[in-house]
Structure formats: structure tokens, C-alpha cells
Length: 199
Image (cartoon, rainbow, N blue to C red):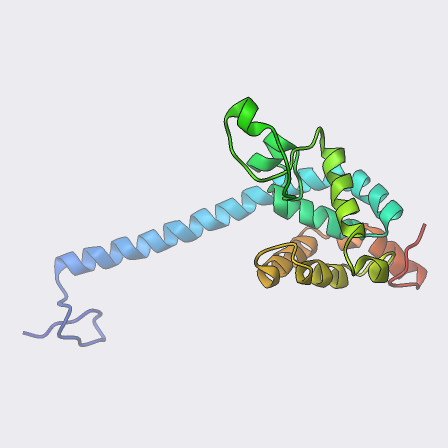
């Protein structure tokens, strides 16, 4: 008896039976279904991110001017850490940046979490900018609108427990949403003073 996995492959361990053929078809369709679901999820994220950017772009631009942090970095981190405003932390705690701190969810909703609670989104955005001002790299990068330098510095400073993956995700979000094209970075490039803040 000759046993085959695929018509062009001989293997004595797996016979080519109606069951193995059915299993291969099922596995193949499961892979296709998984790929389709991933593509669907990615497509659904895009509109959510776009709405989030429209809503919070003015706030990020204003804070960028005040603190010298690229608006693209502020928005990119907020999109990533809040799931474009859809995460549980964002909805229950108004925490758009994954900042750890005190909250009263255990008392009010019987939910235990380590993330900080804010009265509104504006307070969360301000808290993030203030957190950045306390980092060693801030004085060196303040006013520099190069989002890649900021992403590198923030990731190395321990903002995430997985710094390289976090940085790659942040840069990907900035690129996909064209955040650097519409922020102070673009203004700096047009004025010929790349890396300097433009008012």
C-alpha cells in the first residue's frame, strides 16, 4: 500500500484517505477564514482611528505647541493605548495613554485595575504631556518634531514592557494614519527648519 499526504509527496505516516482529504480542505478553509477575519478587523479599525484623529487632532496640535512634543506622537500613542478610544480603560477611566495610577473603579463598579482614572480626555492628554516633561530625554527633544526620535526615546525610557514592538507599532500607526503629514512636523519641513518647532 502506498500512502500519500499530497499527490506529489510520498509519506508512509499519513495515508491519503477521504478523511485526510476532508481534513486538509477544512484546515485550508480555516486558514482562509482566519485571514479573512484579520483583514476585516483591520478594515474596521481604520474608520475608528480616522474618527479618533478628527476628534482629538486639535487637542494634540495645541499640546504640541505648548509642550514641544510632536502631535503625531501624542495622537499615535493615544490611538495605540486607547484602541482609538474603544478600550475599557478609555471608556471607564478616560485613560487614553495607558498610564498607571489610582482609580475608584473597585468602589464604583467592582472592577480592579491598575490604570489611572481621569475626569475627562483633556486631563488624560495633559497628564501624558506632563509625564513626558519629567523624562530625561525631554529637554534634548523638546521642540524637535521628528516623531521617530521621540518614539525611540520614549520606548527606551520604559514606557512599554515590550519597547521594540511598541515602537514599531507606534511608528506604523503614525504612518498608516498620516499623522506626521498633518502635524507640526509637516509645518517644520515646509519652513525649511526640520526638527524645530514652528508657530
